[in-house]
Length: 312
Image 1 (cartoon, one colour):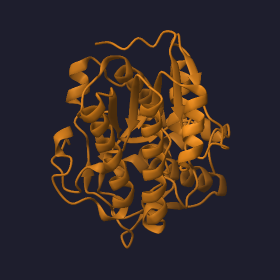
Image 2 (tube, one colour):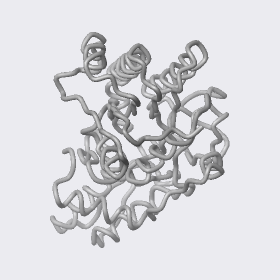
Image 3 (cartoon, one colour):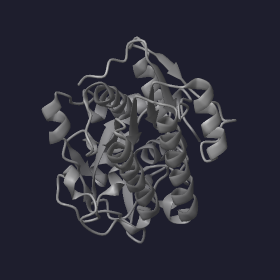
C-alpha cells in the first residue's frame, strides 16, 4: 500500500550530513513538513532522543544520521564506529515506535555484505560470509540496524524498512584526506596537485578494486521512492548498477578537475574488498532507477568542493 507523504511530518535524522541534507532537498518538492533536530539533541543519548520525539511526534522518520568515514577512519576508531552507530539507530528506532511513527526508513551501507559476496550483490547475501576486516565495526552496527527494524516489524507490526546505499558522493561530502571516502579524497588530491603544479598524485593500493558510486541526489530520490512505495522486511539495495576500477575512477576525476600529471600507486596500503557492486534488480522491478551519470556527478561534486559546500 502506498504511503502518501502529503501533510505528513517527516523527521530527517542527520539532516546536516551529506545524505540528510540531500533528503531534505528532495522532500522540499513533496507536500510535507520536514522536521529536524539541532546538535543539542545528541542522538547517542536515549533521554534526549525520547524527549525530542515526545515533543515533536513525527509521522515518518528517515534515519540518515551515522558516524561515517573511509578505510583509515574505520580502522583507526573501531570503538566509536560501532558504539556511536549502535546508539544512534537504537535510540531513534525505539523512540519512533514509542511515539507512534507510521513509517521509518533506516539507511545502512553496502559494507554490510560479506567481503567475497557474489557480484552483483543481491539482498539475500547478507550474513552469508565474513565481512571486510577494515570496516567490520561499521558494518556490524548497520546490520544491527536492519535487524532492529525487522524485529519491530515482527513484534509490533511497525512499518519500518531499510535501504542499503552504495558508495555515495556529491555536495556536502567530506574532503578531509585523513577520513574521507575514495572519491572525495581523489577530487581534493587532484585539485591540490593541479594548484601546486605537482607531477603526480598517489592512490592507495593497487588501483584494481572495483567500486560502485551513486550521487547523493539520486540516493535521496530513491529514499523518497521507497518511503512512498515499499513495505517489506527485507532491506533494499540502492545503487547505480555499474562499477569501475579505482584507477579508472582516479583518471576520470583527474580529467574533470583538469590535472594532467601521473597517478602512482602505494601497494603497501590496503585495497579493501576486491569488488563491491550491488544488484539493483529489486528496486528496478519496483520502477526506480538513478538519473545522474558518474562523470556528470563528479563534475557536480567538484563544483560543490570549489564552492565550499563540504566538510574539511
